[in-house]
Image (cartoon, rainbow, N blue to C red; front, side, top):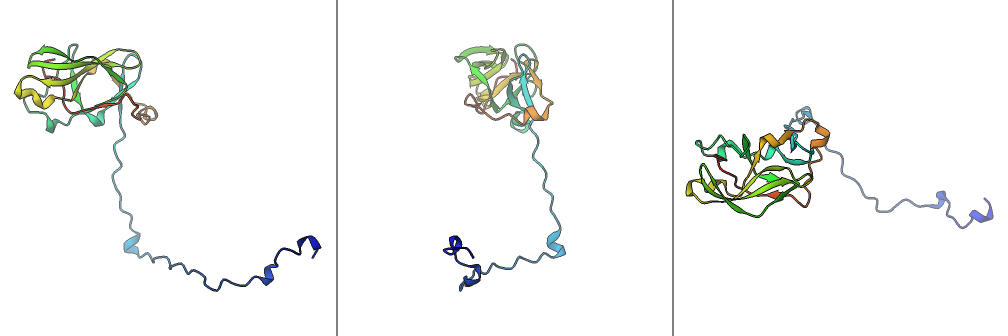
Length: 176
């Protein structure tokens, strides 16, 4: 051995560890345990995007379930056509609240516009003045005419909420 390596211990002089840790033996797997259980995959969110610019506004996963809607209030109409109630929306701007007289009574609402292109997409129901309509408060009534269903799974997977996310529980009236 050369002199420059004389300060390093030789591997032959190393003693074994007097207290080696013993790892537990791996569990034995029987054929009963080896059977894999399958779990259903979560639904892939399909984005609803602004028809004008393609900005993600919401997802079909946050559509208000029909079990939450009274049976006599299922056909929602906006100012320009069919509409649906949603529990969450993204990438939008909300206008100041104002009172609108709808077919189902007076409602205090905020207009919803796309944050990217300022296209009108719907209303947020702040308050329903009729006691029979208060179940809508806090939900978002989006005009389906101004939204487009995104079919590209790569784009819909990028629906991460940004700071402009808005979430609530309640929506606009049937008679919009």
